[in-house]
Length: 229
Image 1 (cartoon, rainbow, N blue to C red):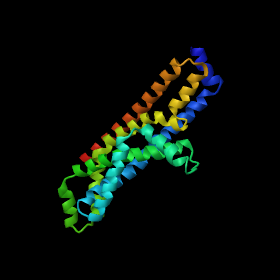
Image 2: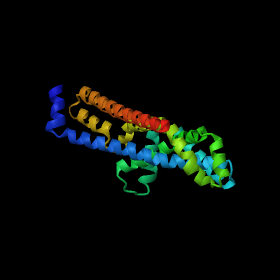
Image 3: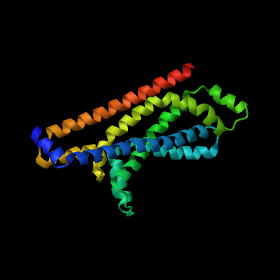
Image 4: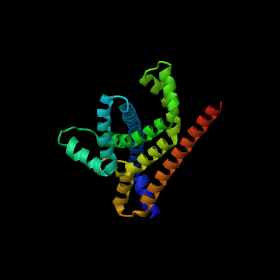
């Protein structure tokens, strides 16, 4: 068993496929989260503005439809719909990894919007009123007063979102993306000795999640120290 795995991993350059899968998995997770934070923050701000502005209220409804669609359907179905219903018919020659980045970013944005809205609402309303009293516009008040406090409140939840995205990337292979799962599955299918490849796959995901967890906790501690000062 070990000899066969070693042969697939080293002799036949299987490690190169795994490294490519690791790179793509990290790319999908990290860039997907960045897109998700941007979209989610935008939707959350529009929701908050919708309580004061009629035009923003219309966009808030669009935001509700967006979050309902992406939170109400499985990520693998979203990947398949975008690949077979949108990208292929329109002949958009987008590499599979970037298809996955787009879909995971849109999916993450739907969840991050609720995270950011909760973070904004957790800031004392008096902070917003004080900013408006000082003559600051709504946008300036949000940017300089509310956001810095809201971000501190949602860091742990955003960390959990990153971990969730990382694990969900295991379905990216459905659209031909060479992620970690597809890479190890390819090694397993070469000689049909599947135990070690999948055990190592689980261990790699576990190590990634542990590393992300440690980084998130370090960020939380640093932010707590800065608050005490």
